[in-house]
Amino acid sequence: MARIKTEKNISRKEVIVAKAASLFREKGFKAASMRDLAEAVGVEAASLYNHIKSKTELLHELCFSVANRFMHNIDEIERENSSSLEKIEKLLRFHINEMIHHYEEVYVSDREWKHLADPYLSNYQNQRRIYRKRFASIIETGIREKEIKKIDAPTAVLIMLHAISGIESWHRSTQRISAAELEENMITILAGGLTNK
Amino acid sequence: MARIKTEKNISRKEVIVAKAASLFREKGFKAASMRDLAEAVGVEAASLYNHIKSKTELLHELCFSVANRFMHNIDEIERENSSSLEKIEKLLRFHINEMIHHYEEVYVSDREWKHLADPYLSNYQNQRRIYRKRFASIIETGIREKEIKKIDAPTAVLIMLHAISGIESWHRSTQRISAAELEENMITILAGGLTNK
DNA sequence: ATAATATACTAACGTATGTTAGCGAAATAA
DNA sequence: TTATTTCGCTAACATACGTTAGTATATTAT
Image 1 (cartoon, rainbow over the protein chains, first blue to last red):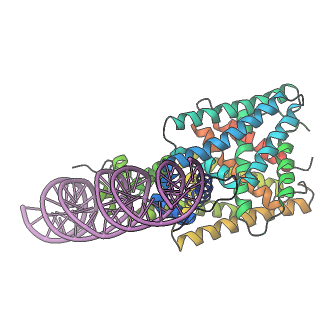
Image 2: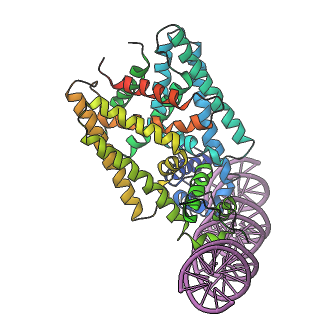
Image 3: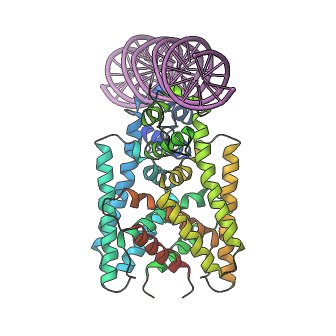
């Protein structure tokens, strides 16, 4: 009888969620079926329901675990005593590294959250809005203190966040530079576009 | 008996394709059903098949009409006698305006192309690859001529293209700056991140 | 060893989906 | 007007989907 393999301290549910991330990334949430997922896990579809409540629950788990990580990070950065530009650079580096090392989760929560059902959906959308506002107000402080060009802060946020989601292409490209090089290039271009001189 | 309304020089098929763009943008290709589309058009689902071959054909039409526009544009720009930086700025402005004025089509072709079926899929992927290579080599020329910072050109391309796809958020935001302001802000940040000094 | 729990299986359900067949009505051409 | 073509309708199909019920088999606790 097939059995879901687990390593120490990893529950069977976590194995399923991880495979779901990979599958949802590859095919999209709607196009990925529970039978696909079952096959990836090495089990029959019905067996998954001994560990999870529903397909959407998998999406909840992914979206909110990612959202929480980003929220905690911006909490910390806001508390720091550093210049706006330094704060922005730290935010960017966090985003970049999340996208490099937790690619599938982050990608899925970024692209597939539309398929969440209320109340999770509105909750998630709210968190997103708030996060962007907080990001934008760091930029606005930087503008007031002349560290940063006079630009529309929400537009800058939108550029930064989406630019980083482009790391998706890096993951799938055949000839790719190292993760460290990628990080430095992105910081150079993105921070360079903000700096006042 | 219901009938698809057409204005002069717009075929019924074109009406369907346009509504499909809007629906695929809103729900995603897989989650948007032919019955949804039929309702949006004001007709029964089966009636759609008097005008189109299949659901995927709708996606083909959208993806390749967008891809062709971008290809023709880069053709023209490559032929010009201008600096690399000017060429890049023109490319960016074209992308930005496409994203502003043909939002739904462009968005769909950017996010939903995965659901194309071969041979369209590989064809589309090829075009994308080629487009990015051409974009990157304009940047590389700029670097050689010291107009542009020493950066990894493919990374720069990936940043630019994804940053612009962030205009999606602009469309859906409640308080938004004008299209012209958006364009200028994006150019300031993106071109500013490349320029050598 | 026995009991209890966790996990997997088979079978099946109701529903939604893309699409086709066949017929009638409306628009257009003769 | 009549003939032809275009277009929309109802009905139905096969398939795929998420999920549940009920049962059997491992694993763990006593």
